[in-house]
Amino acid sequence: MIVRDFNEIVKNEKDRVTSDAKWTSVRMLLANDGMGFSFHITFLEAGSEHTFHYKNHFESVYCMQGKGRITDLATGETHEIKPGVMYALNEHDKHTLVADEELVMACCFNPPVTGTEVHREDGSYAPAEELA
Image 1 (cartoon, rainbow, N blue to C red):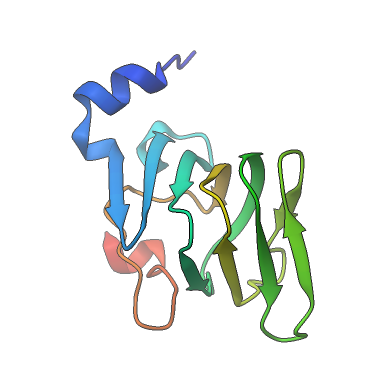
Image 2: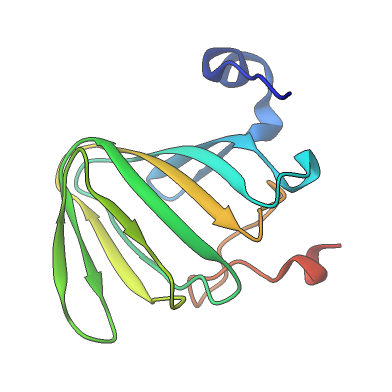
């Protein structure tokens, strides 16, 4: 059994807290935990806009706090993001996420991230075998 305290991770495990342009992700589970997915709590700064394209990962995201919107860049379809809304990038969907208010999101990645990833220019993370 794995039990982790978000507050302890934030205080003590800096290798599990990743910050990028206007967002911070607290990595609760990573690839080396052996669960087959990673789990994060991610904070997106109010007024920020992010374009991602996880070509090598599937992601599901559940909004716990805040308001924003997500646009599928292939279709132009935009969806409201608010507490209780989940979206899943089941087709490696290139998307733009806008945080109208600070967003607090629970995220799962498959395959799991290692915690060392950095977004590439195209908005993706490298495949796991490139990071090994």
